[in-house]
Image (cartoon, rainbow, N blue to C red; front, side):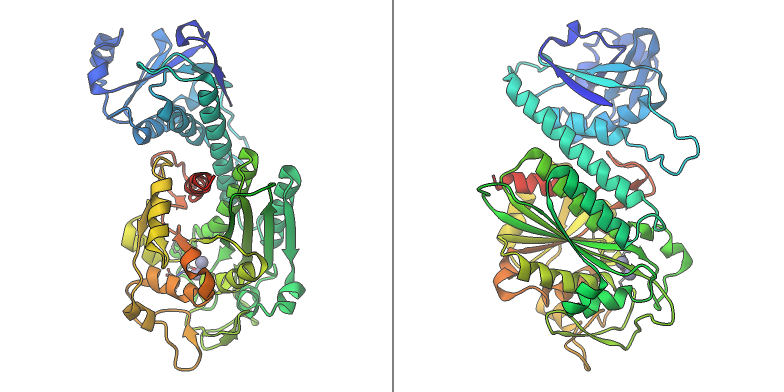
Length: 476
Ligand code: BES
Ligand code: ZN
Ligand code: ZN
């Protein structure tokens, strides 16, 4: 599906279907108000009404705000997926709504069909936007073009991340993920380095190696770099890439194991961010570091009671092999900090079920030492459509990961505050210099969904991509 912005009025665009968003206040002014009301349309948020005889689809919005339009636009996209129209045109409101409207449409149109024997394809080929359809605002066409272009790049990168997350574990093991990264690097002119098992051994990365040892697919560390000329800042993005998390010997119950192909969502989001940032051509140097491994069971599996020496020399008592993501990140964070001297280091991980308990399934848990940076991030992502909630560190929780036999333990000694104790574990692998530059994002809640919400379809959502691109844009 293409999105095309035309420098002419909406009325003069020839399209088979018209899409209109209406608030309760604007409903009465609509030419078809009477018929719409007769059909039971009340302009509630995301309520849809189609008048095929007028080739019109309307969708209710509570306000003409960015979040409302993005969500409504996604609902329209999903509703018309089965229609036969080849072209549609949409009425906009304000410039600030152009990007959410286009994002909502592209993200809402996403439908993963790769494993269907008879994949469905949508009829809609083109969505037209006009240059005139703004209430009283006159917007320079160049600004509109930029908003549309940016929305297309960010949404396509989000859908790319969704595709990777949705790919099943038999088709996406650590080597497959390395191939995906190499292809992205080739396509987008990025640098790419892959550390295989022997390179990980040479780096003394015993934590990631132990997690991946029981799998026939050995771990990889993937480094992808985007290096524009004269960058305004340098940022390292680290992703948890568990291509499957069975729990290991601390085996997950059957019901909890289903969906664990999503345990690579942090890594997939990092690749999506690199795709978007390189296509936008942002003047920021971005390094993606991915720890790819499969947490499995066999005679060689790492065990509860093992003590692992991580790359930075710290020793870790394993008490639960299902708390494997933090072990992988420990080594990758250490490697990332020694390889690149960055202004910021952010990590993304489907790290804990506890984060879902704390914040619900829609919100990313944001953790770190620097409150100013957390505020800066939250402010920069205001209109991105993603939600974050800050979970605070404290010294009492820090004590819960002390170990009697090693330096630290990979789980907390109490069953509460698990999202924070996991982050405090990672903190042991952040150097003093980087402490104030580090943020940890636990995306266990929003990365994957089995029921449609907002712009998100069933499956991978691409959580992390939109918000992080917004933050990186704010550095330029
Ligand atoms: N990948 C899981 C976390 C997870 C759970 C992500 C649910 C998405 C949805 C992680 O590796 C894990 O198993 N964590 C354990 C930690 C526990 C053993 C301390 C958890 O959350 O139960
Ligand atoms: Zn686990
Ligand atoms: Zn995991």
